[in-house]
Amino acid sequence: MDIPPPLLVSYSITSKCNLACRHCYSESTEDSGNEDLPTEESLKLVDDLAGWDIGLLIFDGGEPLCREDFFEVARYASGKGIRTVIGSNGTMIDRATARGLLSSGIRSVAISIDGADAETHDWFRGKDGALAEALAGASSCKAEGLPFQFNMVIRKPTLSQLPEMLRLAIDSGAEAAEFFDLVLAGRAKRECRDQVLSIEERRDVMKWLAEAQVDCPIVIRVPACPMYPLILKQRQIRPKHIPMEHLARIPYYGRGCAAGMPLGYLVVRASGEVNPCMLLQINLGNVKKSGVREIWQESPILAQLRCRDLLKGDCGRCDYKEVCAGCRGRAYEETGDMLASDPGCWFGGQSVAE
Image (cartoon, rainbow, N blue to C red):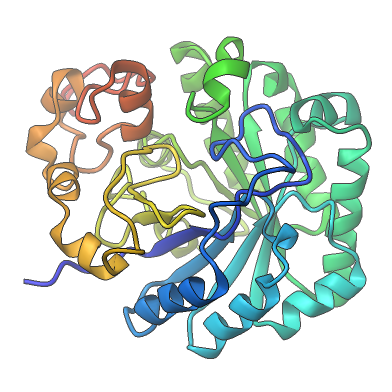
């Protein structure tokens, strides 16, 4: 029996980047990119994705705009009927680039904003002036009618800035604010160990974001924290300005951790290696040798991930395991076992009745 496809496929089209972000999950640098799939193999990947009925193809990186043939690959993908978007640090987007993205079929841009002020953002992104450049990129998108959202990492230094960061997204014209719970994968393992939220901080910020959604005019999403939808449900959050079905479309809403799950998430890295998630960096195979759809259907690792009964510890005992399952990436990075209990969860294997 065919397994339904992922809703989101993220293709890290290059590992080259003009910044050196301290948390980079692909450990990209300006000198990276030597192992990127060549144009022909990138187009072959797109062919494999076409007609699979995925919801979204995310061109990610590194910085996708650092790749010379990016617009060619993006145009080819959108021409195949695939809904395509791009994740960017925003610093390379001017109005001409925004027009080029639109003409290539890109539907939306996710721009990384990691602080409410230049000092906070620029330190994290490794370049002075990066915030000003990213906001200028957002302005260029807005001027050209290219929808965009802000992607923002939650970490200890930005906890006090979250209200300002959310306001910045709204005032800039973003369509959504996506707050990423920092997980120690990639470069973050070395450079961000002291910035990860405690369990209590994570719980409190998720409650704050849930309550903020009530009056917020844009959608708030929280990748890497599948406990967040539980908070939305427990507190009976009903947004005043966002249709409830917009929240229910979030890949992990009501289904838990999306890594490798049907209607969930899959990552193809710049080298062609396939991972369940950018935070769960387990090698499932390589598109140079096997088609991505074949890997999706036949991977024994994905078969394990999809069986919630295999979860261990508190996650395995928890009544929420089918609709949460914890963050499998955080479990893997902190314990070495992708099926271990999520060390960042505050529910602690509780019963629904508790």
